[in-house]
Image (cartoon, rainbow, N blue to C red; front, side, top):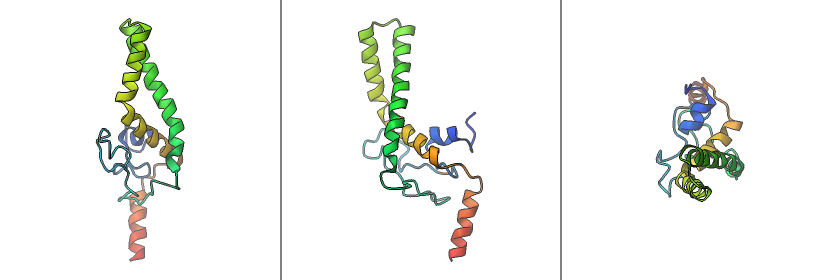
Length: 136
């Protein structure tokens, strides 16, 4: 299910959408507040530029809304349906879930957004190396 070369692999691991050889983020720990959204400029393996244009990741806010809603619905179903909580307790569970998973939601949203525009290329690393050798 989670095989290299799929969009799902890139989205869930935060790896380069083009070659999937390295993490796009400078820190794998999403819970480091200073480094949550800090990304490399480009992939060191295939040369893919992550910020395709200025303000590119503003579109990820719309994806973030959908991902946050999915987390909220999951929290509600777990607390209200499975545990039989009251609506007030379920609301608290939703808020707590959204706060606790905020860094994950932000990263996954960025990963989904960039994967809309960049597709996997199994030859990306080879092409980049050939391009770099041609420049030498």
